[in-house]
Image (cartoon, rainbow over all chains, first blue to last red; front, side, top):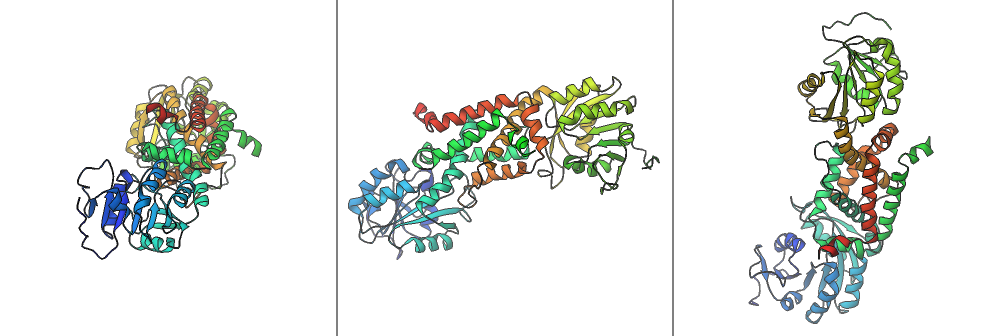
Length: 256
Length: 256
């Protein structure tokens, strides 16, 4: 793979990881940056216009480096890119949780690297009609680059940006993503479920289940295990469901 | 209230109950039948074009009698209308479960009454844009009128008709309605839930919750308690959710 400079005055963006999510954002990013992508499992051609495959070393020397790897692989990836990062580099991740990745990046990346942790609240299913209006959480971890990142995500990618902290993000995501995945997985384990004798509300529930049915196992792993608030939310939900199972109309009787 | 004959050659339809559901169907029915409605809590004017309020006795003497009352009130209503039913009458109910109401009507209504049990799988929320395409389950209980009823519901009201049995209906509804209401009620008990840090799948889940949030308590009562298969479905769901809470990635580890 050659190292010929790309014909652009825009800073190059190194994209580490071309899984389902990396491939989803590579194209839109390539309309704004020369994208140098690295994925050990990718073939010679990225198949995405404006995205050139390269070595980990070359991708990690870009002024902007996006880590699109599973949360569980982040410590290893951070250690691998560390030697190649240039002064002033901006490193971002895209994991479904934020407390653990922010901590991993803060500890593992050199002091000269600015760090912004992000969680795009969308995926290949929910963004199949494009990124416009999709939500993304953005957290400053080190440096002062988060507002410029947010401005770019808003103006260039038309994303709905939520500026937040890793802790606030994980607390909310434990409920929204945690409950969705818990409920979806419990329902999938009960299949076959009715497809015709259904109400509109059950159809909506099953649409939600369908959206996460094919999520990579790593996504569920992160949501269920790497979010420090996830287990408590699961326990609260199961406690409520158990109460309603034992005494289905307790609430009403109490109110009556 | 007068007993002047209605200016129509169509048979009159007696509608017992003008609650949320009775009011939803009274208008569409009144475009095909003179509708004589009875509700002890209704005022002098139904407020619905073509729907005249009347006594229980007069409503029950119509050739078609629709019982739009809570499932729990059905034994009492069946006993109350019994003396007024004319030979050849067709009685229908609209409850969310079918095994218990079919049994109550079979035992409580005179042998000369044909009986069709129905479950409209929609309500004021899901049918707010009209009945077209909404689903309804139809079960023959006594006589041979269900196919004519189905034909009317299809052609006149544009409903999607599912001809079934009370047992088959309740088995499916235990999963579709039972799970929707169990999940919705467990989630409502966990409020406040995130409204911005959400994914598309969580938004769909919350749309489902919103649709049942304001359901009459009697609806949940029927779904949760009067469906003979509901408790088993709740127990299976809670068992799956508990397993996922204790060991969130068990499934994946087992597959790996």
